[in-house]
Amino acid sequence: TDLIDSPELQTLVTEALSNNPGLQQTLLVLEQSRAGLRQSSGDRYPALSADFSGGNAEDSDSQYTGAVSLSWQLDLWQQIEDGINAAEQTVFQQRATYQAARDTLAAEVMSSWLDLVAQKRSLAIEQRRLSTLALNEQLILQRYQRGLGSLDDLDSARSATFSTRASVRELEQAIEQGERTLNTLLGRVDDDRYKVPDAYPQVIRPLAELPEQTLARRPDLQSAWYAIAAADYSASVAYKELLPSINLQAALEDMADSPAEALLTDPVWSLLGQLTAPLFQGGKLKAAAEIAELETAIQYQKYRETMLTAVEEVRNALARELALADRQAYIRQALEKAQLTLSRYQDKYRAGNTTILELLIVQQQTYDLEAQLDTLTYNRLDNRITLALALGLGVPA
Image (cartoon, rainbow, N blue to C red; front, side, top):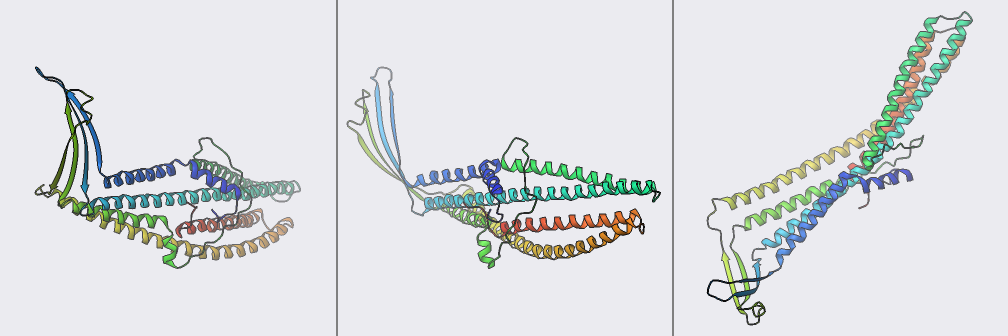
């Protein structure tokens, strides 16, 4: 968000980070993963349970039983610890995914806001074009009344006017649509309108450092890396399902003729050790282990894909910055020349040395170049937002 120095935009980004429903869903998934980690961590500890029952049978007194049992699975092969580590890596993955979603949302808000600035600037250019065409019509009528020119000139001017009015209406509709898009990003239900500055804000150009330093900041890459680690631990858990397990259970039990006496007043204790080893399950456990190992391989390929996409995005944004700068310079020079030509043609038309069609062509070319230069300026500023996102520059966590 430091890319653009605008308090109004900062406020909009903050609102989006608080209200956007898509981002809130990602946050809830993160909270789910944290709850899953707490659930997995509980396997480290013994399980304590209490039981109380009572009953009677024909020709016998009522009998009550109270018991407290403690069970614990020995983590001989670090299987439980691997499961906890897998859950922990999943938390890290979801946290990085959430950060990536925050960064993307902030970039979308900035781009939408900047697009509104661009659309309103384009509208201003078309409205000035429309005013110029209206002056042309007045000038043609004045010349016609003095016996100069013909009504054909007026038809040509009005044709250009109607075409420009259509462009103005199109831009007005685009602004309304852009405002609705921004409202959606902000999580707003109302059809709010926005006041944006007339001039483009300054957008800082992000600096690309060493590739490994640059890409290491990207939360989507971090998320992909944690996904590999989580899958690797899960594969270890699956393989250790093939190994024997040892469970210990201790119990205190008391039986009596009344509920009060059954509350462990004179309990009998027992201790049980159980060794369980899978012998034959039709290859299910081995297949599950292979599936888990393949999942690790899949996550690695996803990481490679994310890495390649990241490199491509950075290179494209850097190349686009240079190309847009060159095009901006060329169009600026072309506009300067066109403005000089327009000034000459206006003088020639007033002197009767050129036709209205020739003047209209030069006017249209001048306004077209002005609009093109403004669009290039917007594209360059918007590309800097894209570059910042590609470099892993985002909003604070």
